[in-house]
Length: 272
Image 1: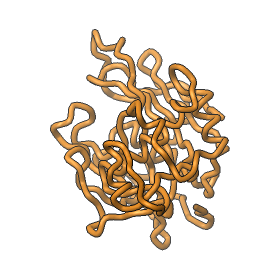
Image 2 (image 1 turned 45 degrees about the vertical axis):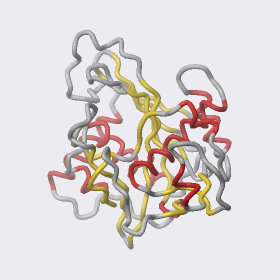
Image 3 (image 1 turned 60 degrees about the horizontal axis):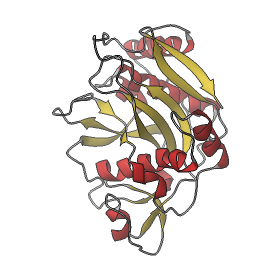
Image 4 (image 1 turned 30 degrees about the vertical axis):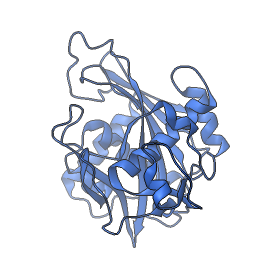
């Protein structure tokens, strides 16, 4: 899992990208800038956010740092056409799926302390397992450890087919963000981060794109900042680069930022 020696500075950036990077760095350090340029629409502010999870996977290719991203299908109501990390809503059954190992104690404590709604080990576990399930559904990549095949519930059949048990110990919390009022749907999303080495199975074709996430690719964060990414994704890309500068080992005890919108302005706080 170690990423020691990886360069996460801003080498050879064009001036417009350097300016954009600096803008986001300043924005996430400021106490009161807007997180989204989408106006609040009347009648939707009371929408209750759904629990969701996203998985940020880091790959090192020589001196390059890359992350897995894909484009959301244009027919989807939420962020159509946007370049995003794999992820989606948490299912109630995610918390009871068997796994090869469990979350690091620091990760479990962070989730349990700050998760929305009733506090439970099953609920905290569901947040992490949902990220692994969504990755499998949207890309065909199976995060975990090779193990003897065993029957898995609906939605997890690929793990049985390829003899993989989901693994949780390699996941660290990178950030949490609640979608501001305005979009037709709202999500309370936990962003988990891990490394490519935690992938136990890769399809022969590289990916198995779903009807939801397309054009999957390992992309440099700097390139993703110049692609079709929404503001919150751009913030997370910069958060990732800053995290790797401070914490190249992705220590699960590292504090994680929490973003939420208050009066159409984002607020950032650090949770540990």
